[in-house]
Image (cartoon, rainbow, N blue to C red; front, side, top):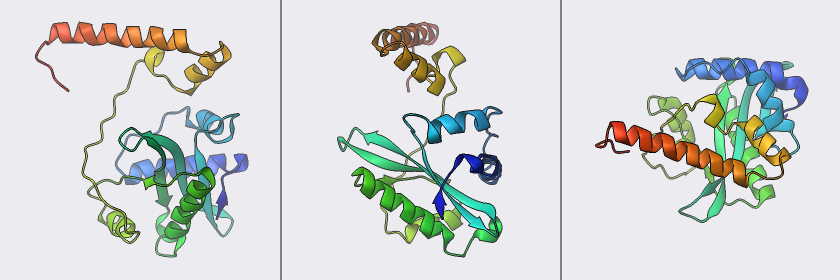
Length: 192
């Protein structure tokens, strides 16, 4: 069990592909191998990753990011992904990866860990129930935005390089507001 290193990227991408297939999710973008290094190892990493090895090959991974809870008015650690190859399940690796998250949270001064799993994944639900966490039912929504309005890392990096991003963020907000107004004009009865 250890932190992800740049030399792990090819194996990590392979595990991520296996994970999305397992969860019946869309395949990751073809740019994944290029964007992960920035997220994991950039000047201001947004993603913390840990991997498990069995016989010198990656057999599992967990990734975490610090997020904000408006309701709590505080930060929390989000367990974004936890995946083990089928042969690595039942060996105690999953709990060790979650414990890495506990240690990361403590080191960051964060006092809550959150995660989700598909409702059909009863094995994962049983696994997570053992930690004594409280479940909450919510639906998760995802909206793909056009490339110019996505706010993806490269755009955020450009804004930082331009000396902040207030003007850029304001332009994005205005553009999104205009698009929203246009959409609502087409269908004034639409509600979120």
